[in-house]
Amino acid sequence: MKHYIKFKILSTGYVEGTIPPQFSKDYVRPIDACGSDSVYYLDNRLSLSNMVLKGRELCEKRGNKVGFSIYRYNDSLLHSREVVCVVF
Image 1: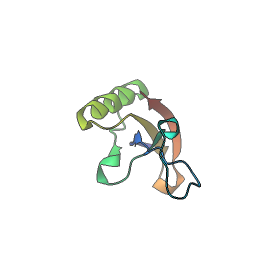
Image 2 (image 1 turned 90 degrees about the vertical axis):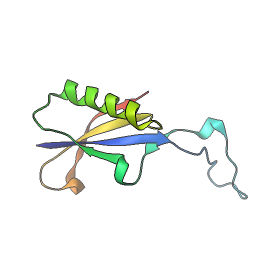
Image 3 (image 1 turned 30 degrees about the vertical axis):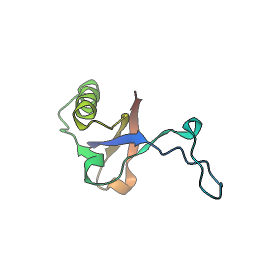
Image 4 (image 1 turned 135 degrees about the vertical axis):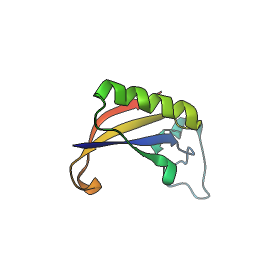
């Protein structure tokens, strides 16, 4: 089994279905980040608790991250399964 972290950022607060677009703080929520900084592959020798600690450490270093999920996969990222979700 292999593991990776997918980081979360805050959404813009877009109110769905509004024309022209409207934004509200009530609609801000954590969403998956995009790009090369959104995924971090973990060392599989780590325990789950150490993986969570590593995720927290990386969130602090990367600044605008508000949480993360840890996923487990075998051969393909397309068949991954969420193990833990942490949002600050």
